[in-house]
Amino acid sequence: MDRVAERSGLGSPDSLRHHLLRRVRLTPTAYRRQYRPPQDAGTGRAPLTVPLSS
Image 1 (cartoon, helix red, strand yellow):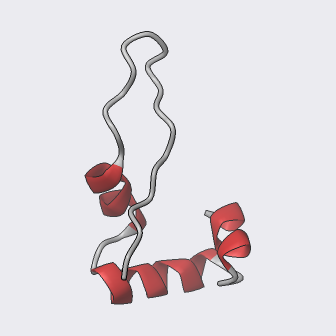
Image 2: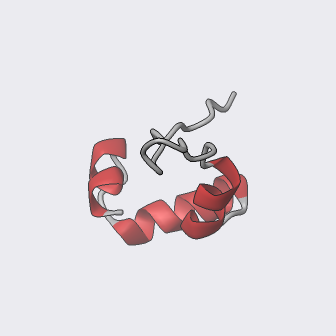
């Protein structure tokens, strides 16, 4: 959360949570669950993809 908040320009995890809830009405955990791609059977991992908003 710290790195994402910093890289997105929001500064802090609290600010990121606030804006995420306000913008998409999801907590960070709920957002990850909703938008996480299916896991690759070979590695058990998948790259994180974030949908673009208009």
